[in-house]
Length: 220
Image 1 (cartoon, helix red, strand yellow):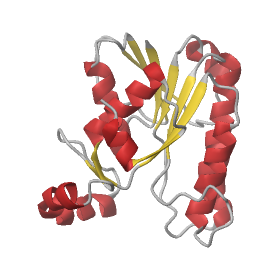
Image 2 (tube, rainbow, N blue to C red):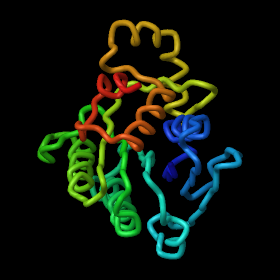
Image 3 (cartoon, rainbow, N blue to C red):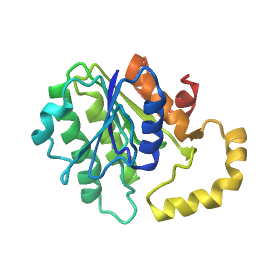
Image 4 (cartoon, rainbow, N blue to C red):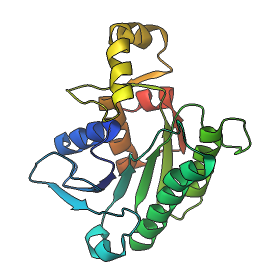
């Protein structure tokens, strides 16, 4: 299986990339982003773009892939709805439309978050924009498309967020992770499980197109 990852240098993306490189059923991994993935492996290649929405110049390098695991994402903190829409809906759909034209037999797996608003009408700005993005992705003619809505993700194996505020939050929450796992299993997962779940969806698909944390953790 040939897998493409967007956002492999982020916290979730690092976990996804690690699992892809460990999986014997994944033959080739392409990391696409503004910067290099930061990993080296015989089956890993990097495509770096100053403008990640401009894929026309690297179209040939993007053909022939079985799945795209889309891990790009930004916090909505301090953003207007217009700007957040540009960096979430517009960016994601621009990339997805290009990929489905190049690889119509591709599966597309996208990470949003717990609380995403499929109605697109709720009070929470980020949830509306994420819901609109989910709905548009699920309407594209991929072989299959799936969205994951994790809540708390514990980074494992030395993985950490590039965002200072998130790094601090994980340091402060670290002593409580065992309690979260025990008492909030429906809201807690790990970077390792996220990676394995996304690979499974890339390989096998799923009857469910929207997967909450409990669904993510059920995938083996």
